[in-house]
Image (cartoon, rainbow, N blue to C red):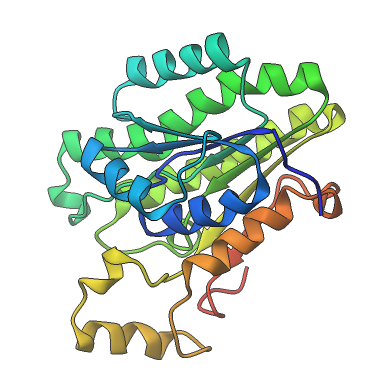
Length: 247
């Protein structure tokens, strides 16, 4: 596996279910971690779950506003010189039937699930190109490939993220940079923990493996995609869903 020691690694949505698993997985790499959450409370909770070391940096950033994303990226470049590994994991849902979908729900879901990822990639990829090495992993969703009623905004945003990933991958393939997507299926997180037992049963009945995935199923794949062994994998959308959807 590639040695990530001293590399600057950015993880957005670090305080969520998958984000917390990613954050914990990377604490053993001795990389310089830049962990973003959507609120001070969530970041404080994440800080309590991780070891207290100088190489972990915590930030609370509202990714729904472009100027916040831009200012954060500029401050990281100015203070730390840039980011070598970007993991765009932040995402939100604001579900409703399409006919009832408000403009604000559409715009906010696109701002966080797509626009923030685009800005972050664009800001940090120049440094990766200069160094002739970099890794970008965008966390998408199985519903971007399947569709899902009540989630037209989320599905459209994640579908666009998939397309963005492929295009960027083609543009930087000769510069030692890989760009990939991971599309999780149903993962056992705080969000799915809110489901009733009946809802969970109906979901798992649809999954050939008969269970939800874990955050470790995602973080282990992310670690592999950052390794030298995965250096010939780029522009891919890798599904992790227990057989729910076969690409």
